[in-house]
Amino acid sequence: MSRPRSNSDPSADNNKDKAPPAPSLSAVLKPHIANWGQKSSTGYVGLSNQGATCYLNSLLQCLYMTPEFRHALFTWRYKPPPNTQFEFDFMDAADSTDTSAAAADGDDSAGGIYDEPPEHSIMFQLQCLFARLHQSVRGACSTKPLTKSFHWDDGQAFQQHDVQELLRVLFDAVSRTLSRVGKGDLLNDLCKGVLLDYLDCQTCHNDRSREDIFLDLSLTIENISSLEDALQGFIAPELMEKDNRVNCTQCASKQDFKKGLKFRKLPPLLIIQLKRFHYDWQLDRRVKLSHRVSFPRQLEMSAFLADDILQSTPAADLQYTLYGVILQSGGALGGHYFANIKSFDDKEQGEWYRFNDASVRTLDEDKEFDDAFGGENIRGTGYVLLYRRTNLKLPTNYGYFPSYLARMVEKEDAAIKVQWERWQKEMRSITLCVQYPQAKPRPQPPSDGDAKEVEKEEQEEDENPILAYSENGTQVTLKLDVEEWTFMSLLKLVRTAFEIGDDEIAIENTRLRKYHVEYDFVAEGYDDVNIATSKIEIAKWPKRGLTLRLETKQSAADVFTFFD
Image (cartoon, rainbow, N blue to C red; front, side):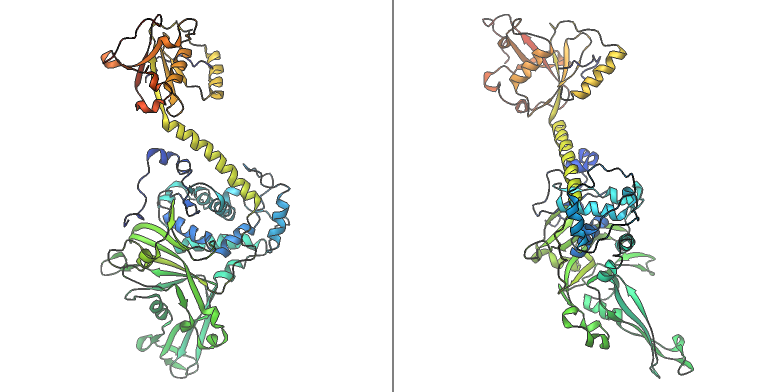
């Protein structure tokens, strides 16, 4: 056991989904360590909140739980620039099976085109984050590597951004990356719909129209109580008359026109934003609409399609199933976001879960599902709705997971487990000062050169419970894990620290007592044979500031002073 250097001062229910309370100091310092071993019983992994990133966490969980998006991430192969260094084995011979599996889905990462450096690649950081959500045993994972790839600074993590805007940023980054391997149309194939923006002359019915592409819909809900009504209002024509008349080339004069929208093509994934926030010009401020707006679990879209498109579209392609709801609680200037998401991983493919930052739990559908509609005394209102075409099959080889990502997660989890165990040990550890007035003089403190050697030795033996000695050698400072040390093992450690051999004083002739330094008072002893093998945690000693004194007697015939 190495000897530490001398030290002159050795003693020196309705509320269950609210925004999580401020964590303890230790959790603030090491959030990824603090939630180790706290994985939800649902099997899903949460996401740590960086400060105000609950909106990001909710969106990311929805994307992860979208089978097509998750599968696209896992079948894409990251191609790092030359000489890129990884903290895990990025590629080895076992990945040949991965390559063929990904190729079966059309992934082609061959060629001379490289992706961005890993820390700047949004696609790669998304893939790594999804891998952690897929396999990690942690309770929650950090999104910092992903937001770093956005080039966000720490301040931006404390600013809430618009969910719809963020979705488009992610879609754009993913589309640009997939286009380099010939899969750039993936998100368009999944989310792209077509609207017909038309002008119809009310005199000659000359139709002027153009097609508009949409990846998501934003629906006005003011004075509206259901999603169906909001969709009907979205396509309802507006009569342009009087001062708003439009020039008709066929009539060669200004005429009344009807202006409106028609759905010409619906995407497999229908993403709808309810406009809960708008600017009130009378109040001269932004306000939130928290009134009840219901939305169905099964959405039938035939009532909103143009007649000619409706006739040529199979009825099954117009049936949609709700699988995700992002909710917002709070006001127009800020609040907390969380998500209700339906799983496609369950055998029944129907279980709903509540994703609330680091917390994941099963949703009580009977009591909580309708709360997302909004209304009085409802803390969370549905803001973004995700629908999936009911007859859409899961991707081929849906369970595919690259082995290099599995290695990454395993290595990260192993490293975090070690840190967590050290942190737990630190939380359990206490500092004791033990005095022994009859101790032998200690050697002088080492010189600077020797000190460096001692420091190196201490680093190699960081489990050494002896922290320091006083200058005269009569006091030693210890740091002990209360769950590892018994009263007997502590006594043996103190004897070793003061170099007391059995040939000098037998162990039964030594004992430890509590010592109150401020009163120079020696209190109870810890020599009861009934506690010798008990853990020292039963003494409930404070983490810092406790002092013990080592007492000795000459022979077994002598009696230690009794303390009442």
